[in-house]
Length: 102
Image 1 (tube, rainbow, N blue to C red):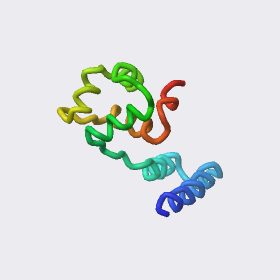
Image 2 (image 1 turned 180 degrees about the vertical axis):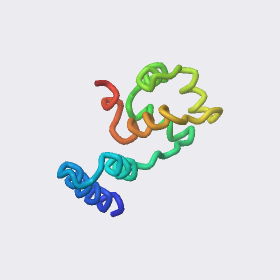
Image 3 (image 1 turned 120 degrees about the horizontal axis):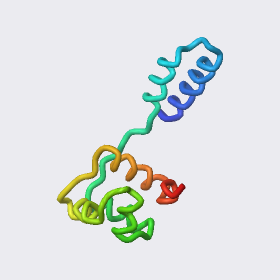
Image 4 (image 1 turned 90 degrees about the vertical axis):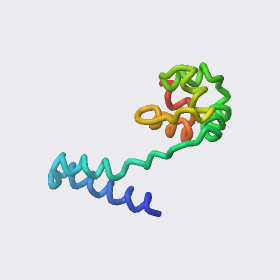
């Protein structure tokens, strides 16, 4: 429900920005508010995401621009993804590896 409300508010704000009644800076602030939340994943969830995309640790690492040993450490719970890696992992969890292929 909250996402639908944010979508409507963002659409209205976008229209106001295009009409010149809202500054670019204010529109950027709306853009940030409407970004989806970043979910943290535990070791089992990361492995499930990789396996559901039918990828080896090496292939998964290549898509996420990290090393196979990092993927292994995530899946063993020794390290946790953060920053851009976590954002990419969220995208893959939601949309599949294809989202990173183009």
